[in-house]
Image (tube, rainbow, N blue to C red; front, side, top):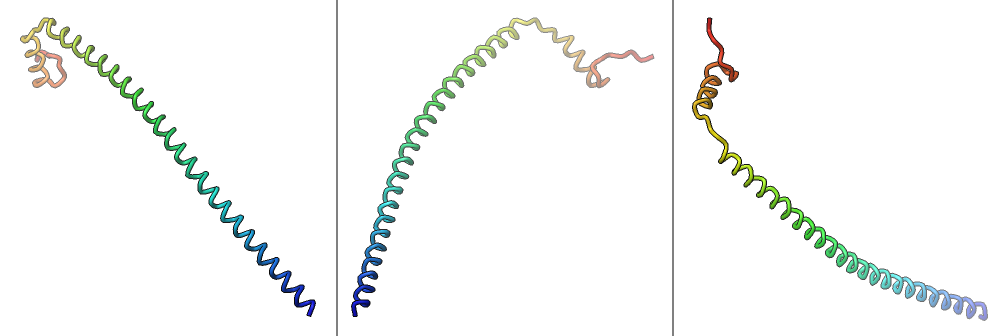
Length: 109
């Protein structure tokens, strides 16, 4: 009978140990989940801040390039407007392209 009490006591201790292990696993899972959530929020905040900074730098660079492009285009237009035009020579060149196909007038012999 005493052996039965000892075995019963050992089974109770084993059940208590199993409950402790289950509780410890649940606590570990809860802590891991909480840490993952905190790291995810931290990552998202840092990522958003970094992307916002990159976007601002991009927009600033884009504005500089656009301004330079507009200035260069304006200068080219001014240069073309003051450039002398020889409509007769242009017409002769265009005609020679149509007739001869190479832009060079050739004489026929």
